[in-house]
Length: 79
Image 1: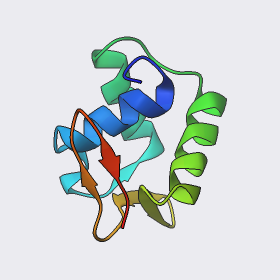
Image 2: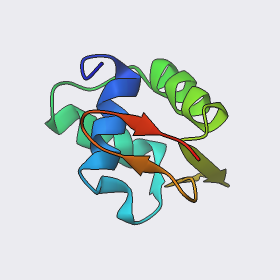
Image 3: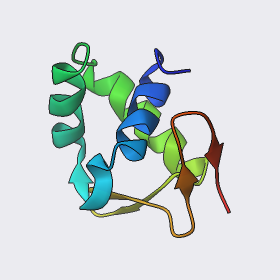
Image 4: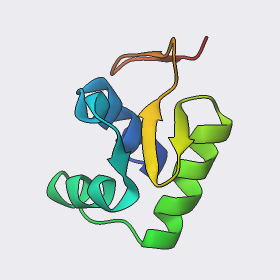
């Protein structure tokens, strides 16, 4: 779902935004430029859920796509 917070974040992954590790504030800034800023609490929950879902690995304040993750604008496959 490209309209949900998690869907918008996954779209950023597919677009290559996370080629370098990103902080949550950087993610929110990009979301703001692509359709409106997200409440920091909601963003924190969404990023945490995406870590649990196997989309991201969190190292300190930084998020990187999980090893082996393949994501397109049509589907998400965690391996």
